[in-house]
Amino acid sequence: MAVYSTLNKPEFTKCKYETDCHGCGIYPERPKGCRIYSCQWLIDESIDEKYWPKDAGFIINKNELKLDKNYNVDLARMLINDFANKGITLSVRKMDLISI
Ligand code: SF4
Image 1: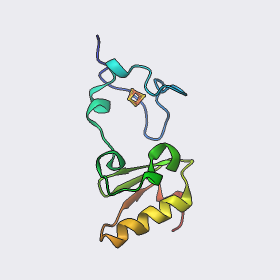
Image 2: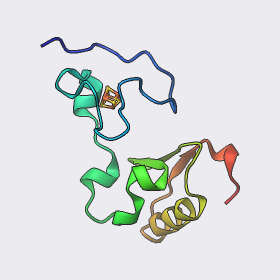
Image 3: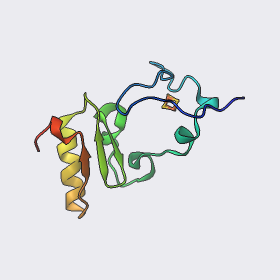
């Protein structure tokens, strides 16, 4: 089994190994970065199910929100408010796409 060293792709672009129905097409050999990465939604049980990245169109990293071009604006606003109520300010990437 050969482990891929890198994906060589820009942020916010679809990975060429992503499949429509079955997730990662090279899962056993995926790069190290994919193996060690977990978004906040996955590791923080206090974050509501509705913010699942595939449905929401954004990914929550620690103190950061990364918006995909097809993100759900209403959910993003709710999430930012939820975090603000906990005293956490999310740094929003691609903020130029929306005004909150
Ligand atoms: S796990 Fe990594 S290699 Fe697999 S689809 Fe996702 S980004 Fe691509």
